[in-house]
Image (cartoon, rainbow, N blue to C red; front, side, top):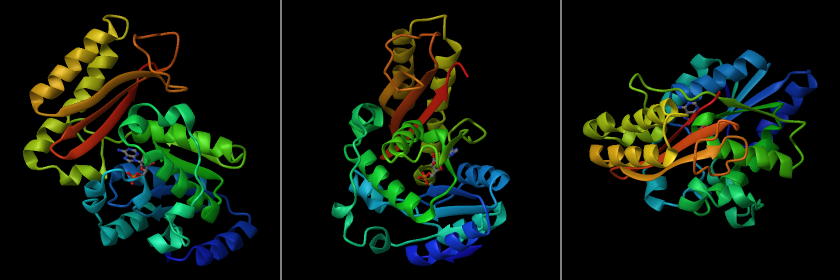
Length: 284
Ligand code: AMP
């Protein structure tokens, strides 16, 4: 695996690979890699000649300073995992390389409705930062295929919109990869490393709620199921931020199950000071 820290060096390499007719797959990450990230690399490996990954903990997408400061960094393990997974190129830039004129000069995209709900409402500025960094990374890599995880469902919708705003949707195909889970159902996340053992034990109740929401489609009212989930999470010792149901195509919030549309259930909850999110498509 070749590692580039400079955008110009990466671009020179990619331009020459593209000149050889090689198709490029790209998965952006913030490192502290786990099997969820590896699944993106594997999907990219299966469909592209050149597999590119980036690791960059983007300061502009953290609305919570302490979350940024405590974000795990495990770069040598990450490099070993990427090599094992068959990644060809790692882009590992520093903040000055990504934002040479400072983040305040990076382009700002308006995600409109998508930035007003769920994560957008709870994490002001988060998607603005995501849009900035992904547009800069896409400009550096110019991939044919972009791999992102369903784990961050709303982020996938935001990036779909970013591609549309930049009129890149025909040049870059977005692939939304399935959520990889631990044996007890907890969605893999870099932040899981920050959970203590007792916190780790209760964290899987988020997944149990999603399973329960799915099992009650057509049998119960969502308002009732939502309350049961909030009660369960609270009893277990989590602090739920939202238990929501939305149209999976455009994230319109649904007050009630609607089997005429594709639905996604989404949960955010805090376990101690670690904030976790998860979701499930209900009528796949
Ligand atoms: P992150 O490093 O958290 O920014 O994540 C980088 C990419 O990996 C994003 O597209 C995430 O959605 C994806 N990802 C994170 N966790 C998982 C998971 N458990 N399963 C599948 N993809 C994931």
